[in-house]
Image (cartoon, rainbow, N blue to C red; front, side):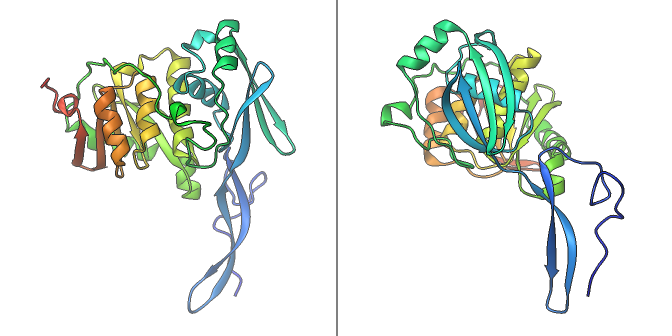
Length: 286
């Protein structure tokens, strides 16, 4: 039996909805024991994105092709390529047949450092360390986070609900992670989505930097597990608290302890598990 599409088609969209960046439409079969229906469905895009600094390729990540200027800036900051947004002099996004090239103009002094300490990456979805050339490149020598912002536990549930409401790609495709920023009052600012959890966090850090927002004045909320590199990226951005809806890894916990990051996992409604530096979430120093 052939079923009608999910929505009556209108010009500009096979599903009868406005186009959504970072998605595509494919034909599918919806199967059950009793029937097979043909339909159309939204799927998330996953595209090779090359990050190039001053004409030299540095990393290739599989990512959702949205908010790429934020991604370029956030990746540069969390990976230590740039020390501040001022080190990024320009970003150009070029769509090619085989993927997307993000061409970043890096200040000369930082580019000299990059050439001397170049980290060759070959990223894959959800992987933040693919292609690291040595163990020394994994554990970066970062200073402990000094952010003193504290948060009432009661605001987490409302903030997580706001984060979910901002996941437009997830609502259409069910395939993306999100990272959002919460201020000390529980208000959720920018939310960024991507098929890769590390990419979503990089996009968030970039969005905060482009807006001139003090990242230390809030917390990062992520819809994934909390991996080691998620903690390291948060610390590199000066974010004092990382809240994940899923579990952390042991290395993530140890890294959070070392870098002074409050790490919360299994954050659902009015519950969470605190793994490191819980004083920020209790709202009192310890």
